[in-house]
Image 1 (spheres, one colour):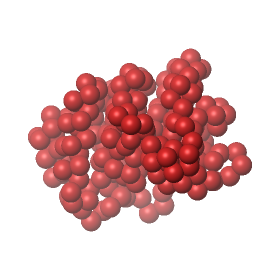
Image 2 (image 1 turned 90 degrees about the vertical axis):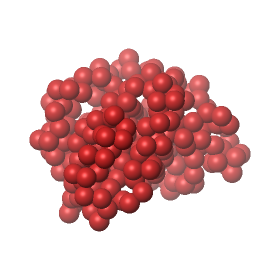
Image 3 (image 1 turned 60 degrees about the vertical axis):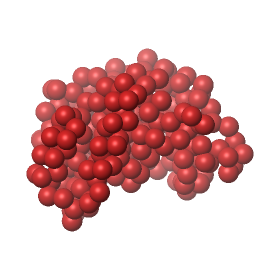
Length: 226
């Protein structure tokens, strides 16, 4: 197994739930899995974790790492780090992010990192999520959806990853929209148009929880190839 950076073709494509599902699946198999969400934003969740996503990842991986490691920088408004830093008059602390990343990599055998938004979500002027992935030197897994328009978004995301020289492990199709492209057609078209493998398809769940997703991942993905 390797460490991975989960990115997406857009915000709200299911990166957190899928990253959590993989974290739990690997943890259940006895792997020492760490998790990280370098940047998070939105409404403050609770006193232990400002980010609900970060708390979900920690629970999924069954780790007790402190919030300042899992989510080093949180912005209490729903915006990119770049926009939030301007609106809140705070600095984006990349040095802190890199320091906590290195610390987590030493603490755990493997690390699953979830990005914020899409591949070109701005972190600083002329520094994007793609730059962060490159600096972390991690292979990336791209989460996409089935909604009409996703092929365009997926191709642009993959092209940008290739332009940055990023190693793409593959694509995961999240079928939570349910009323978009038929998944078999989408898998065929994405693989044909991009030369990137679709690692698997996450179905729509009636009740979405970590255990359901992790069981599906364990049963339907070849985890030995990760």
